[in-house]
Length: 326
Image (cartoon, rainbow, N blue to C red; front, side, top):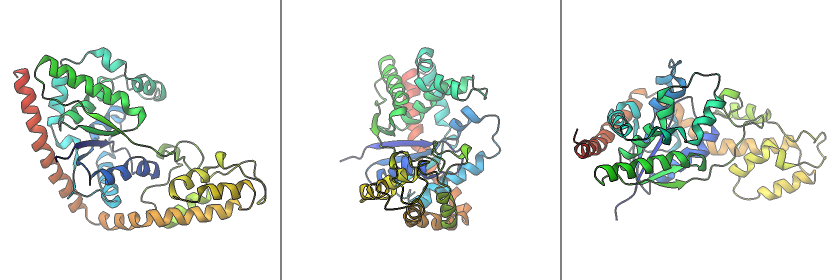
């Protein structure tokens, strides 16, 4: 039985943090044993909001690749490549843009949301408006039938499905409509309780050393109403409690109950969490240290992946050209 094909992309904007790891990378590692997986470092997408400052782009690409490999993404089981190294994405994007109504792009919910959220940046650009169509080209280039997404990304996938349907109706039925594989993204806040983000400085890097993990956990915001060790705590407002949900498979409710009864203090709770995080993440940290010494190997993985990706994307592009008579 033929395996399904997955396309997953990640923007190279910085090193990955624990939110990225549990939100995406863990799933990538699991999927490579079940599907034919194409994993793209989508550098063109990074330009849609960061075109003015590209000085760290190449370094970020290498960092993402190293983070993936250190976490267990295996180039022998999947195709790992950089989006811009497969030029077929750009031509397919261009051809798809010829028949994609402008209104389809303008109605994508995240378009207006990000215009509001990133109002300090000048992103009233063709590239930013069109990035969901570029995403559709990324998916359709490999005729991916499965795309791992969170619920907030469903509108982007629906656009890809609409584009495939319109192409198949106008020309020839050769592009499959990709299906969503909804992934549960654990809510992992930053150490200050806000959304985890490098821009806030509240993140824990995926490749953090044990010492850095200890430092970060010590700084975690806890229940502000709990002054003394024996005071009853409120796990629902405590940053540490959110991390326990992710790092502890059993016994979370017991810890919460101890907190509510004032039987465990915040310092002891932080120490236990620290050891849980280190136990899970230290092997990744050690593998990253080794991979950082092998930049030529990382580049070779990306070069081989691009060649494998181009072989598939070129076939799709040729079919699209023939169907459109160009």
